[in-house]
Amino acid sequence: MATRWNGPRGGVRLGGLPFAAAALTATVALSMTLVAFGNVTDFGTNQEFVRHVLAMDTTFKDDDLMWRAVTDRTLQDIAYVAIIAWETLAAAVLVAGTVLWARSLTGRGAGYRRARRVSTLGLVMVLLLFGAGFIGIGGEWFAMWQSQKWNGLQAAERNFLVAGFVLVLIHLPSPQWHSPEG
Image (cartoon, rainbow, N blue to C red; front, side, top):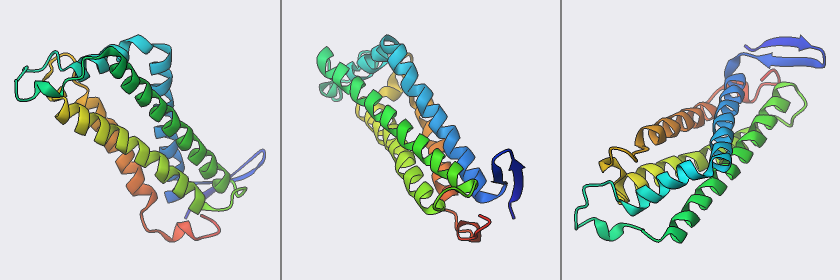
């Protein structure tokens, strides 16, 4: 059963699964917002990261793999801008999901269904970015795991696991999703 806190503008349902879903969606939204913001305001740092991963210049340089390398700087920069655009869009969707959770928790929303749907979209976007993009394509196709200096697999795995945990949490079966007390 959720606890109700009566603040200056009415009640907020604290505790319970919907509150956890809201808080954790907000956490991933904040993280993705900061990632996108950092890549925009410090463009060059991760631009170099993407260039080195795609060029495969710090891997074992196995002839059987090096044909995969992308050394054209224009293509590298297009890939980096696409990553930033995806991060920004995922952050915006997750912020929207957080707003929908907050509205539902305060009784001003239409319920949890829309918050779950929007949050699911944002979380799947994060999973695709870090799972398919960084772990699959960067880690395996471009052999990022071979690089001592330009290896982002640990950070990608952390982001993937956090988003995956939140996605599972918001889809746990619970009577709270249907209760007027939420």
